[in-house]
Image (tube, rainbow over all chains, first blue to last red; front, side):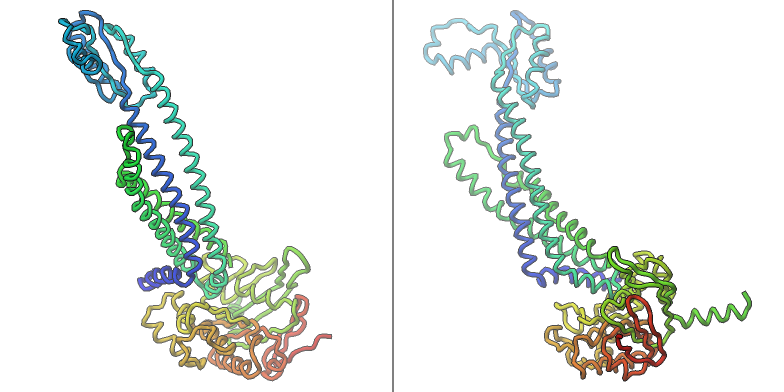
Length: 298
Length: 244
């Protein structure tokens, strides 16, 4: 392709956007609306998953040792546990620390009556999991270790969180798939109608001897530009709205602040920008290619 | 084959620019649009194709443009076997054919200059060549002063001149004109026909499909008459044959 043909094609793609103002506006509005819904849903789901994940990380399993177990064996057990893939963190709590913590939490000044540590056998490992659904498997393993007396876990919490996690995953995959399908249908329909109106123009080009590539290129550039603008608008709106909404929620529900930890706008946009632009530009690209192809057989 | 035979064939190949042998074209429904059509047109000829609606004129033009394919027989235009031509070769083939339609078919959102320049851009002419060729062809069709106008700002006759300029700017070997005067008044019709004659005198083969009896009878060119898909007459200096 000659350089001036390339620039001509590019220029035509840009000009087409202004030539067909209503089609351009309708397409951009459709793409923006679909991607706005998609972005909004993604932001909500990601934050929800983040909150659940945080809650998961607070769930621990506690391992107590048999009476009089040597320190070296306790250390060995700690290393064995730390090697497990589902374990994110292992924290050793000595008998003294356990007693200090118990005193502070429950006894206060009444603790002065105790001369010896009533929790002398309460040294333990607090184990935090990276994936709470692995808790039963870990517990079975811990119980099988020689020197372990008792394993405490919050089975209900773990089961609930695992269930919530799975539900959120299924529902979000389902809703995202539906949103994407609806978006693709709506957007390609708009592109199809817009290009069908210009069927005559395509026919003329073909009669004069234009190659399919020459006819298609400006439409494809136009489609991709519309997709890009259509993706950029909801991204901009979500960016502006996100921090305002987060601040409002944190302020309004300050009592739950230890539970509500939100993702930053950057964390959301790390995924949302490439996905939205990919969808917008991709639909513009494939939508225009397939629609123009229908009219090229002249 | 003898040396003489070879020479005759070479001469024939050089001069015969359109050749249809026993061409049939049938659509999925109804009677065949063309039946056993034999048609041979030499380089530099001016030919009228006449006939009533449904006689097969439009089908013939579409076959010559390779918009449609034949059902049987053989069709050869400028050395291209149109029954076998590959889809990707069609644009190159069409660049040697100028086409003018009754409804002008201009790009409505582009001005006169851009409509004509478009044909040059397709064959990847440089901007320098386009700037030279387009004004000179617009001068030939008498529209030098209206190069900035959009099609809707022009009269029917002027729009047809733009279409003609677009068809001619790439110096085609063959010019097909499908009812070029169908939407024009007598004065403009004659002006367009004069331009077509002038183009033909410069060496371009011109085929005009028309209903215009007065023009056909006055110009005394070769006239091929189609009736119900069959060539019923082919006269060197013919006239419009009335329906019985």
